[in-house]
Length: 444
Image (tube, one colour):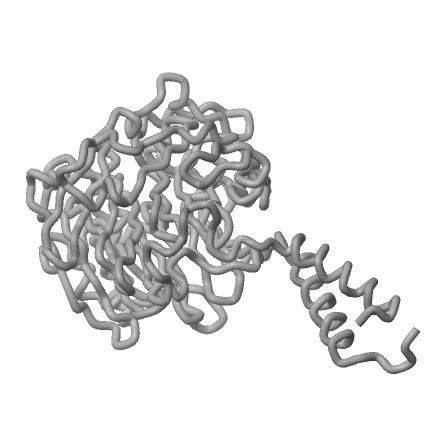
């Protein structure tokens, strides 16, 4: 056996230690924020008092939903979906003031003005491109799903300068201004830049497509986007709740070849090629296929560079699908594989009720917004039961989101048989363990 440890052996051992640490940290969860009722960063104490007294701010009517992260800042949406007053802000970022986490309207108070069609009316979700710092915000244009104030629109902000840089109003034949519920959004990269946005319209059970180049939009409808007859009742902690809600969650594959979607009122997970969505003349059902049934109904979901993550609402949990493992075991590609390996990432029956939406940062963390929607939505006045309604978690998953460095992806190079960055921490651990043993035996 060699008496001197070669440099390669030292590097192998270092990599082994790093890989082991990453594998050990996977799934480590941290509760970052929690609120019973949220409060805002008001311009002055007098402004807050006036808002409370005139009814434009009713704390118990404000429940956040969407979450995204950019350069250490958390952005969240507060949908105006149940009441027509009492919610002064629909898009905000989390700030800490005197040790308390509050919400600061984004980009400012003016942009939140109800009834001003140049401002935000009802934001359910948004997406942030980490490569450009642009945030893409969907606005139903309606309040309380009954006040039809403005056309539905897509607004783009540059987070680097906190400025609106684009706005597109959807024509009413694509998105109704009297019945739409624009719910979630993903972005599609083509030739190194964002070309399309895909948006779920829950009330219409359709996917809305917007082409940034042609500044045109269309929608795709299919029976798979509706509710399932046996899926609308969700049992949470022993109590049954009825949610007859169609198409909801949507996620983009990291190679930008497939979109995944599901209805809240159902268990099925579907896949559709982006080529189908990109072409308004394509048959609606072209390429749509059922992947399988999820362990529970799902609100939001998100694709990382490796796994597809989704909420398991009835289990107070978040799961992920390891498609790479299933492809290897079935010896098929991503366009043929079915949903088999569903793994629990985090579960907490009291503090993770209704995992709503997700976000990735660039440090390997998955952020989760949960909000006890089942209690909030089914009560005329949400009860003050001493429990927080809204919580934000982060879980270490050692990967980034589907958009991370998307501008560097060579379109069309992948044959679809593997996902981007498909090597897992466990694979790394096993490989380097063998190298480590070889080091000890003096083979290197």
